[in-house]
Image (cartoon, rainbow, N blue to C red):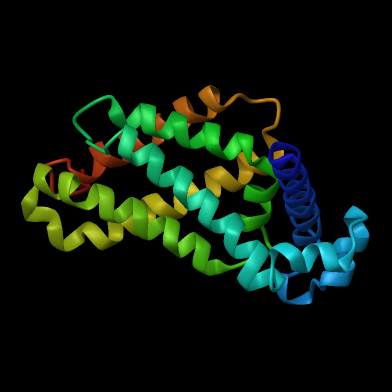
Length: 200
């Protein structure tokens, strides 16, 4: 009986998350009402309130936490080290996570994104896990690190948005390979010992 109940709960939550993702593609999280969401997925309001207190602090928070846990797992399994292939396998794992959660991930980083704080948390997580190993490569450039991170993180976020929105036919492996080449190219350019462009 417990397993049947668990399955029912998982199905209900999955329906609500799918419905939320669809609505978030059309409007901001602040504009989505519980009534609108439950009507969209054909679930009673009382059923929604059995699981969540509201949409932003309940349902959306759970969605974001689950995504962050998956990102943290990917980092634990593939520690970011620019000198090793672990970076590629981390990126590949990340794209698999995004692909498995394509609808909600696309909504979170889309124009009506649920919470810009989610993007900031993701940026913070990646920076915390990679800053030390990157800074160790060329310590004399530590003062310029903030510019490098800004360039890389914004570029990667743009890449992810485009792939989520238009790249359904492109595999996570394909996306990971392309993103990896871009990241490696950026790292190489940033840590180039030359002082920049030389005029002829």
